Image (cartoon, rainbow, N blue to C red):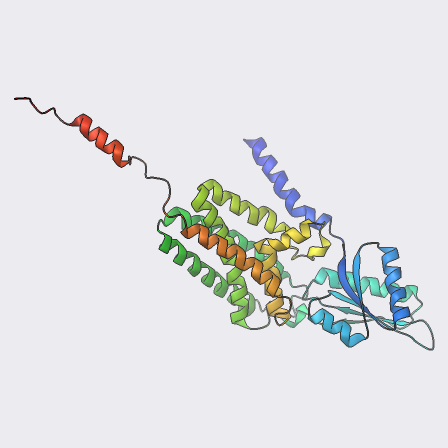
Length: 337
């Protein structure tokens, strides 16, 4: 038994530590703005230094670069301006609200590139969409990243309880919807009004969190209704052991080994984190993709849950045919006259 516990511990540690240990950019979308020859030269140097690390899009100017960041088409990028008195002047554009880790990485790359090019003035860094706008005491958005794990755990428990405690289709359906709405309202209140970790509209943030909770709890409950406790355990394992580590919330999906970074965005924890960031910080830019993924999980969970009511027959109950047989066996014979 002790060996089993140690083996489980090793699996948990591997799954949760692996994304952090292997994190590095892989086709990370960025933009480079400036005159084409100069911008291309910067892009070529980036590709030479770190092949395959960045997926570069070239734009005309700083405004276009910042718009790409606001639209979540890029995590950030570089603005290059020719200087008549020396080397081109390099500026950095980041969005710490999208990924503090990527913002820090791009800042370091820009500063190193500026020094290597002989730029004497400090490299200007502009945080286009800043996480610090929500909470000055949490510049890295740690509260948002840490908040997904409690939501995953409580959603697993809620899905399991719905199957174990409730038997009717209507009760399960209503219970699941009530859990999703309550979880969204409560979590948004804590993150936005308690810790001030979220900007934006409270109702929109609550809806994003509620849809995430509904998708996770619905999956667990639906599998539990079909396969019993083993099914609920399978659903919980997918959310906790795969969905949470592969969510990319601590860095970015493009920082994880592929295809696992993309797989993580197909699971509710990753899609939920992306949706919440979009509605809270980016005015809903790029929200459609994660929203439809969550809606799909939630719909399948609800349909599976209501499609199968009840649970295993109660112990001691026998089918009607068997009860009739027993009654017949126990009946006294009718005397023949």
